[in-house]
Length: 315
Ligand code: SAM
Image 1 (tube, helix red, strand yellow):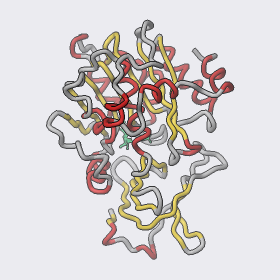
Image 2 (cartoon, protein in one colour):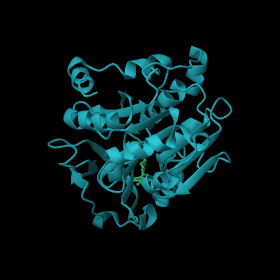
Image 3 (cartoon, rainbow, N blue to C red):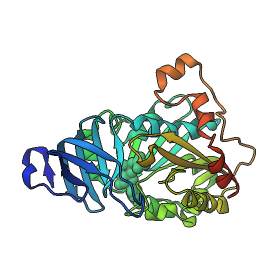
């Protein structure tokens, strides 16, 4: 494990870090996920690097995106644009649900989703549980991403250190009153400890743990420019289990190709997930959110024609 103070920068090596024109750069190099392209950020300072029990964790201070968390070589969040993803993945299901009392977050180690959920405490949300496999990610986020992790110790937030897949397996057979109203899967990408989240089995576990009229949402790990075929197959997997499945996307410059898609689903066919069920005044929206609004909610589901056709043909 290396922290800023004991890092020997001259001898620091990491597969995603290289020297270019005398400066240090991070490049998201992953031929499986991003063939032939790589998003890069100039590094001002390496803050931390270690291999935890579950993954390679790198945190650096970038010259233009603030502090950046990287797991297994893939950017998880940057201080500059994290609010875009965290707000959309949280407020789309919460504002589409009439009474989102019990909420479960799977993954979410940077605690950005928890920060967004706390905004709804006493206004519908009562109970927040987060299940993160790697306590190191939480500890390091508290240290290096303090604005994101500021509610990690909020008295109304329960944090369990466990594998999210196993956690859901252990819940099997819950009676309806103990099930969740909303489940948010804020996981890392399919390579590594989050691999099982992108399979039909996982959607089955989600269906067992969410109430009949509940809503689930997960990051899709891809966007329409990078791999539309993969997105169609992920949506298809969700549609094998849930009867009402939609796809929405957020603008996120630090995710490769500048966007990230989310799969949102419910068993309730009367719900229109593409529109918020509850809305706030423009003034309240401005106070509560930086990215989300009722208009952004609806717009997030509007896709360019070719992508819309490809994804609608799926389910
Ligand atoms: N917003 C990010 C993105 O879209 O790339 C994800 C952020 S969050 C840091 C992802 C978290 O999922 C990580 O902290 C990782 O440790 C956690 N995670 C991965 N696999 C998991 C598992 N099986 N159970 C629980 N948490 C898991």
